[in-house]
Structures are given as structure tokens and as C-alpha cells.
Amino acid sequence: MLNVFERVNISGTPGKWLRRAAIIVLVSALVASASPFGTSDMDIGPRFAYWLGGISVGWAQWMLIIGVLHRTTGANPWPPGVAGSVAAVLFAAVMAVEIYAVRT
Image 1: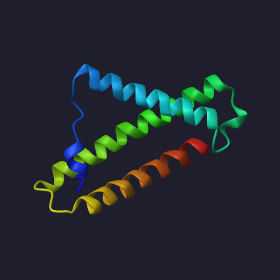
Image 2 (image 1 turned 135 degrees about the vertical axis):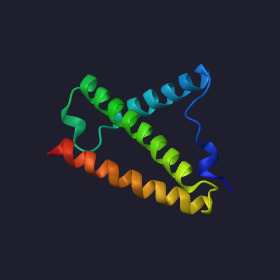
Image 3 (image 1 turned 60 degrees about the vertical axis):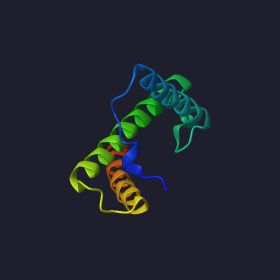
Image 4 (image 1 turned 90 degrees about the vertical axis):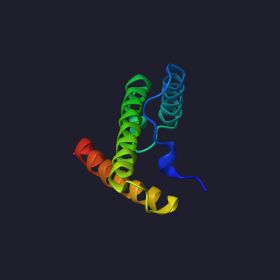
């Protein structure tokens, strides 16, 4: 079974960083072209920048949450599904607050 904590490795070779950046740009382009959540009123350039920023910040926060959980639980006493679920709930809570702050 996949252990979510085994995948925590923020450092890496330049190739890994380039691959991560390419994935983020590609996903941002796909989401910008789909224009969900009322972003269809924006021009494509600002819409792409909006989603690139949001997805980049989201990725950084996800890595931070996983890293903090990994360091605070030490020997990883949780099964992988539980650890991933806890991280997902924390991530959703943080993103909900951010989206509320941006939208108001």
C-alpha cells in the first residue's frame, strides 16, 4: 500500500523540480482552459495567472502539511489511508479559508 509519508521529499534534483514545475504549468493551463468557478469572465492571460498562482500555492501548502504531519508523528503510527485523510482535511480547511478571503 502507498505510504503518503514516503513521498515527502521537497528537495530533489533540478530534473525533479523541472518536472514538478511542468506539471503545475500543464495543470494550470488545463484548468484555465476549462474556466471553472466563475473564471470564464476573465481573459485567458489573467485566468492562467490566477490558476497558476492558486495551484502553485496549493502544492506548496500540501507539501508543508504532509511534512509537518510526518515530523510530528515521528514513527508514523497511522495507516497510510488515515494519514492521507488527515492531511486532506487540513488542506481543505486551509484552502477554504483562502478561497473565502480571495472571494470577499
